[in-house]
Image (tube, rainbow, N blue to C red; front, top):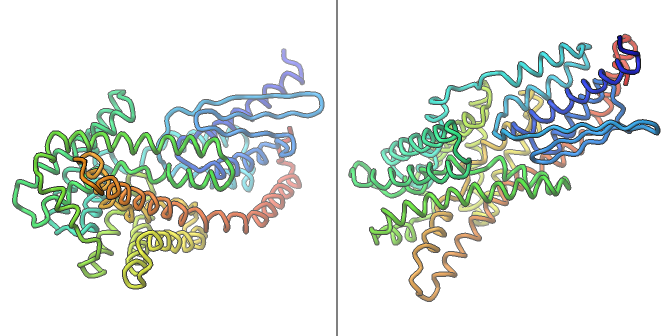
Length: 447
């Protein structure tokens, strides 16, 4: 028969285990580090673990918690291996952490709810997600200036590449290799589609067909983490982002070397492609909405929020175009303002729809990715022939595209960080009030 001390030790281990499982689910669902720490601290408060004696260390592949006082010290580790993007799980855990306090959940109830979140099927079937990814890339193609037939061709090529990637991951292939193969397949199919003669812009699907791989969430989380001073996790996310982009570039380059570079006119066509919108604003609005909803499906956002994200995509792209072309501030400032406005609206919208800001803002800003500049830079580097100015041209496009992507990430991160700091005191006060109520009901779980 166990002594009282042994029972308390087992109870403490269970609490630490629940805390770590909560953090693991957040990390593997692509939550930013600040959100992981805030949610874990809230769950720790529910579990009766004193904040001044609790130490949480978050890393990309490992979570560590330590609880110590003057006489004892307990540490527990949790590996994080299956990284993906699941915005529904992030929202559900945030709600669970508050609900557990307000409704006096027992440990069994909390564990049961946590397991429900972990095992909950995704909101969309694999083929529906692939269709969404296809239309997301088709939306990109239309934003780049294509006709609607090229939109359809880009969607089909992206759908095929997305399914290839999913099958390779299911077969256990390395993540980065599967990205490279998917980009290769999509680009080859897009090139073959140019011979159909169905579109007046036959080469534009090449720009958009592989953009479903763009690591928008890791990139924005990287910026978030660096600004919040979680440097180690931020650098790891940045390295992961670079690896994903590198794998995508490798697949595209291989396809270009085997197929596209034989057509010497393609490089000229892309270098002469106009960056000025020539369609009415409503056309770009439709394309942005389609693209944003497609990425929402990839990120597993709730169905009820699809129209919200579509509206966010419209606001982001139209704001960018207005600042860029109407006001003349250029694509870098235009992209920053587009993402900044969406994120600023999202700060208020989180209270309307009861979801984290990133759930609404990240898929809304993805349609602003500068695919034309990225492709020009890539073609410039792989098609060098020793002509004066080639390196300058390639670097100019590459740096511009990198600055635009960085400004998109900053535009999303900055309002959210300032708003989070502004409301942190109110949330902490509310949390303490709820804990006091729980103590008064005699339901507080003491350490």
